[in-house]
Length: 315
Ligand SMILES: Nc1nc2c(ncn2[C@@H]2O[C@H](COP(=O)(O)OP(=O)(O)OP(=O)(O)O)[C@@H](O)[C@H]2O)c(=O)[nH]1
Ligand SMILES: [Mg+2]
Image 1 (cartoon, protein in one colour):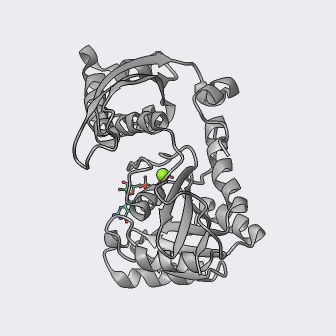
Image 2 (cartoon, rainbow, N blue to C red; image 1 turned 30 degrees about the vertical axis):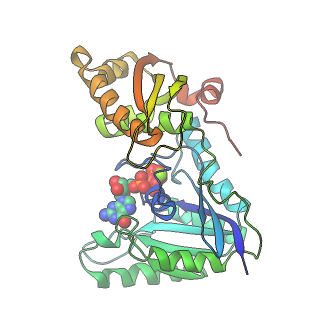
Image 3 (tube, helix red, strand yellow; image 1 turned 90 degrees about the horizontal axis):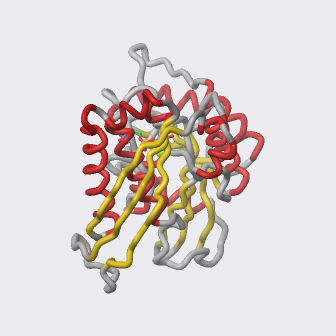
């Protein structure tokens, strides 16, 4: 019996949702960073096995949204719950010195939505590798078990892969019987252009601090693949042809533009070099990358700008 269906990955910012999506699919589909609110769109990741196909939806972290971009992000995440066959709720195995567990506002909101949705839900407690003592898991499990009738609760590490296969097996059991929904070789529906913009944004997240990550958007203006190797797919690890890219980094204020460019252009140079090597690996091609920084005042608050920058709902 073949099973297939959609599963939404929901949780607070920074709990490791995108890391898990990448682990499950074996591909880097979603960017990851130690800073919260990294993911801004729903990201499809399809896992195809001989007995099943799971279409995972990675979502932005659920938080108390201030501002329009953040409101769209939280809507995209919570809205996904009603569109899927089952939900994977992720929390972090954060231990406090006295072993007490605080659920927190974001998780309370998610629990509320889960109750209303009545979808089969599995809870994964992620980052167990970072937990100093395993017994610290027990109060976390007990606390969440008392909050919701979860199908099952799994301690996992998206980083090391611990517990992920068992988690997948349980998730499959929640899907209906049915045929493949996507061609088996299809891992995502993201356009290369979008992934490239995300890879650049990931490097900005890694190189810049404070408000810069939250005020930055990236758009690829030109994607010229006329010199790309015609014999795609290029063998793994090999690189073929050249892709020329022009991208714009949008920030909200002149002061932010100065920081992203840096003294004598040093910061932008670093961001560009790091982005280029990531993009080369992703496209399996040599990349010529030209980066421009522009101020777009209050883009994260304005609907016209949000639409142009790709932050209105895609599905
Ligand atoms: N130690 C440890 N760190 C992890 C694990 N999973 C993710 N992380 C780290 O946690 C941070 C956040 O990971 P992401 O995958 O970006 O988290 P997210 O839930 O997608 O975050 P948002 O997109 O902001 O909602 C990164 O620094 C990851 O490397 C894990 O299992 N163990
Ligand atoms: Mg994410």
